[in-house]
Image (cartoon, rainbow, N blue to C red):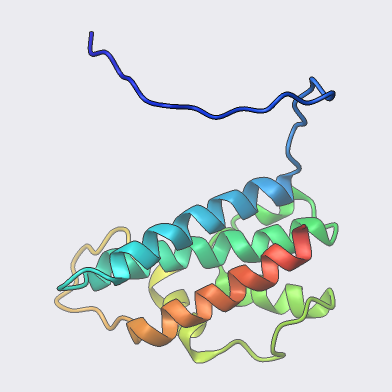
Length: 155
């Protein structure tokens, strides 16, 4: 067994309980974690466009689901095959719910959706000779903006 050593900082609080996160908070944690990975990957040379697009798709999906969950959409509906990985449908519902997004989905998310949604070409590129991926810079900028809106929405 390997010994792991390090430092930890803690502070005492009068509140000795741990709160269970809401589903919206859980989605938001995942969105922010995927965005953090995408930012790091985006700084590498050469950039792995395939992996960056995969992380940005996942971050976008979780950010949209965080906002929708916060606005009252039940998790079972968000996980349903009709919505699951469908970024454009999730975006449209968010707009209907009054979430502060442009009425029409932006081009970067439309491009991610083509490879992120069923049949999930980005995760399972079977039988393909080539795949068109979104412009990486505008995609990462768009995902950062989307996660910023989600962070403000979920608080």
